[in-house]
Length: 363
Image (cartoon, rainbow, N blue to C red; front, side, top):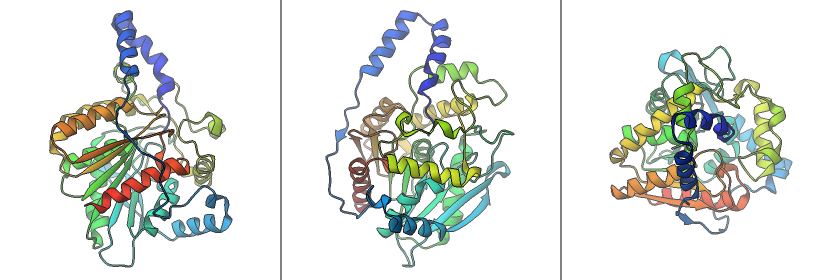
């Protein structure tokens, strides 16, 4: 997901005009001083034989991943409001194999998940993934295809429901699971609230359940009627992709592989977020937190210690609210990790993936 923190200074100037400077700054300092008190995971063995960073330096392994991904089944379907939705599936030959649906983050596409899909498939799962509307190889809704825009947030969920009903359920699977990352977490959590019986369990990697303080207030003021890049956001610019400046992952090889994949498929590239996307997302956070009681699906949530994209305090608030409602859930902080837990350094990625797969085995 593209960083939004660099917009904060601009947003604060708008908010401070409406509120007391001292009150706002004091409240902001208090919020940011709070720590997420989730359980911390420890270094673990690679029990599921996940691909490692050293292996990603081996052309034989890389070619195996690329060939596997290329041989997946691709297709499209018509989503809400006539938008074409691209998807890819990797179905096991064994009838009844467990299935995983992946809900990706903002700016992302199925091609970013090649290694993840490869590892999950090798652990016996059939994999289903679609590119959310407005990004990847799915249809766009603005004249500028680089704009991160959403017309109606609910359409994300409606597209996913169609994908589940018409594509995933077209094959027999004894169990179905969800893995959702970042923006895909907001989509996935809403999906669980609206469709509580579709998945046996769900896992959330750095879910987008809130932004840094001030973002939503400013977006509400600045949204306007015409799609416009939010402050600090712009068209896709590959020169900004230097590893040392990134706020996504500490794994250089995985970061480079992600960028190579998008360079090879320019149509899948997406630029910065619009005020419309930010405002619609902020309204969705309220909806999600107002419907926690509807969740039946057990879920596990992972929050990165060095998170700079979404607000980890929103993770804590959500999980605490769910636990008060006696929902079946677990939450963990991944130490020394950045936002992209599924393409992080080996230690952090293995911790996350191990717990996801072990959690799914319980249900």
